[in-house]
Figure (cartoon, rainbow, N blue to C red):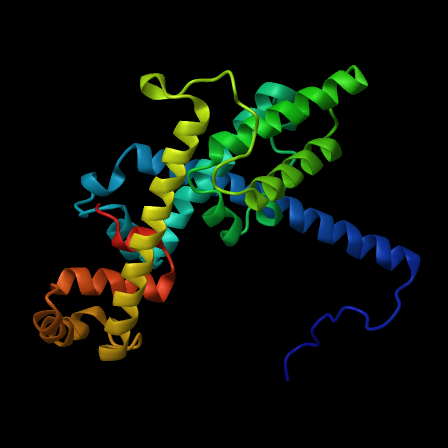
Length: 259
């Protein structure tokens, strides 16, 4: 038999043991936070450098799938996470100082669902964070501390996620493009988003139909023949059906967006 493995105590610990475990947990959380921020930075750097073209891949998703073994949806979510993390970090650095730029927990503040919800709304989020950091500094007469920064970022993420797609802020004196007033422009944007949601709904229904013909456990290459026949019957093509099928499987709208 091998040597006995060290086991953590079961049941109430002594105060010293509790402090030791708490310290280890705090260090692990800090390591995760740092690792996620490093990951975000390196993802952005690799994407900006278009490394997939140098290495002979057809796109970011193909590169990430082959090099790191992640799915198409995960590859694009990494980009979304990196963009959100970079924008928040830059905002905190600008408003609270470089010493606090890492004073928020990416893993807890930006889980996958939050990243999906914030897609296309990063400017709205960073504006809110900047405003609240400035207010906190004005109230205290000095830059906010790490705990305040973390709370402001987390609350801002939650508040933006809870808002409707078109914010209800009063912007009566602001004018949109071509001389439209703000309410007209907001209504126009809302209609566009409604149409986009309807389009995604249609893709989802098409994807569910494709999944009935070629269930999720069937590989794409094997599904192509099945979906080719289905496409001929319903007036669609194989690529469209494959994309809709991926969207129904992952919930990621980029599956049906043009590259």
